[in-house]
Length: 260
Image 1 (cartoon, rainbow, N blue to C red):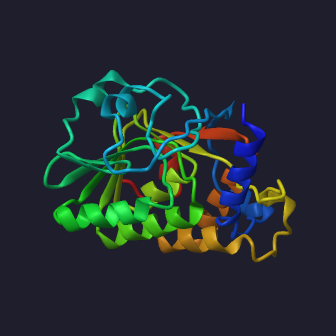
Image 2 (tube, rainbow, N blue to C red):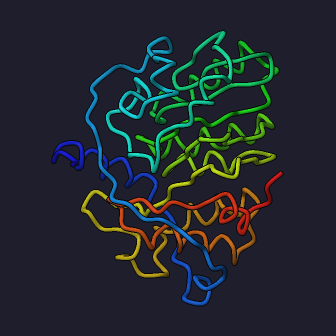
């Protein structure tokens, strides 16, 4: 369950992201999507955000210690695949990022206000990185930082990959969308839900013409969706309450964006 303090903190954080636009009713009918909805719970974990604090084995094989950065994390739908442990050992770590080789970086953990800076430091030290493998990414504790990071991923020309057993939820879905090429295994999971502001109001509580909706719609179009798909995807995410998560499949995501 979410503690009152953690919940209020999360509402304040998500308010920075709440700048989007409701899809009209016809846009919501743009696609038929098969989904699974589960209740979202959180575990408090008070820890630092240093680049050397991540327990790689825990990030790969457990959901209780996904990253030292996060105060809490949404529970994934199923246990991570044991095959994730065979993807290679990290040569260097920068926040939630583990550099595997000259072209590949692996991500496990939340995005915080420090993550864009950690990403920039990683690229400065390893400029050849072009493949971002998203192993277990619960989302964002700072939505403004999340969108900054997403655009940095796009500028870096990276492809984003969710391997077999991988999971991206909440704001991490926006990071995956930022890839210049996007890949996902057949069993990859994508968890989405509505945003909520500091008063507990969710996207559906705002009028369709309220400017609060604009930022995500603009971002989705920036990442390659046409206007109809952007509105349909936005409506789909906001059809699930903030404290729940709606799981989409690889094929569901392929209805909105091209996969490679």
